[in-house]
Image 1: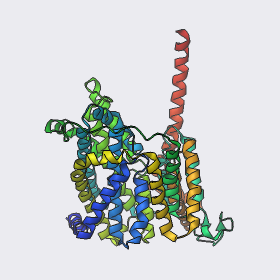
Image 2: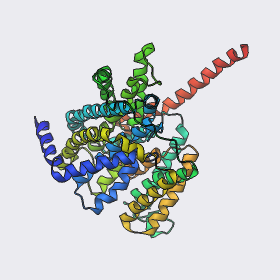
Image 3: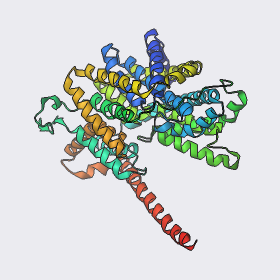
Image 4: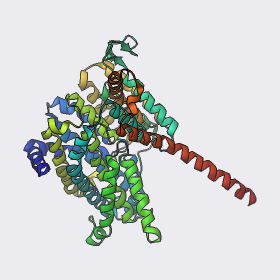
Length: 507
């Protein structure tokens, strides 16, 4: 009953005319940013952080704006996936597998509307999960001390960095580079200048917005400039624009399963929408068996990842609010925005800032409903935006990015540093290094250092405190598991190659 009262208070915050308008603007901006190839929720949220400051928005309104942009970007990414076969981000890669074939078959409207409905259901299920379980997790998180938080942040870096992927060494290098960049500036405890090279401009450290926009926006501009063509023609939406009752009934159980599964994956620190969509698609494909036409325009293959993405995006906010640990790269950016308002995410946030937390949760219901209502009628407009050639898209991104960075401190040094970071990001992308681990290492580096120092000061320098509690031991066990998975995968591949070699020679 107490939770319901808090939720009603949250709706009182979210339903004010100003916050309703902010949520509407955020969903529209997020959708447009998300559907443009190369731009995604991290860029959209990062660009709007200085805008929120410029307009003097209070913390709850700023967070509602960023959350609406986040959800809008996730939907916009699937528009380009369905119409152009270009995933707006990694998570929507699974959407291309059946969404684009549906569009080629003349069912683009059905695919877009069904993806909107599936995402809405997934996000609705996850938001309900936030209402039910986030306060419980916040109370449980009070048991976390500095040693437990240090172990949890190590787990977040290992998991969100994708250490279980196919590039564990490159991922580790990127994460360590992010940790190094977080050390630049004055040491808060000793006052020693670290890695500043006698430059007063980085005495306070590298600015968060500079790093984010340099890594993602500037590097994307450089990649766009490599392309001389204007991009392929968008597939026009023909035939009926909405899915029918039979199609909704066929995917209803998939929506429920993937909504719950996506929420669980989203709550895990570091799992993210990419893992959620891949798990949902592969699971439903196995369950369909020979009856499925996955990869050829099966609506089940479209509904499964879309539901999981919508659910995991909302689920990723649970560890952000309750533990202060980002559940995705975008929520890492949102944590940075909260710290700019001198608000520390964590278990005490529900007690100290109930209007902010419950206003955000209530706004998720509202923003998802807005996305469902607004996006289907705007399909034709979206296809026109997708026709923007690269020679016009790259300068537009550059202008928006430069304004966003310059608005923070009004210094040209930040612009130059952003360009340098962008060149670094471009080189990393060309060498196939992931950027998200670098960003996560930068975000959590300062917190990890402080928690480690606090833990060691409590124990008078004894390292045993780092694994003395049951929570810490369980967390370190999960870290070891995540580190062992890539090695196990490599061993299996080598074993498969050894078995295949004699067969190939025999033929």
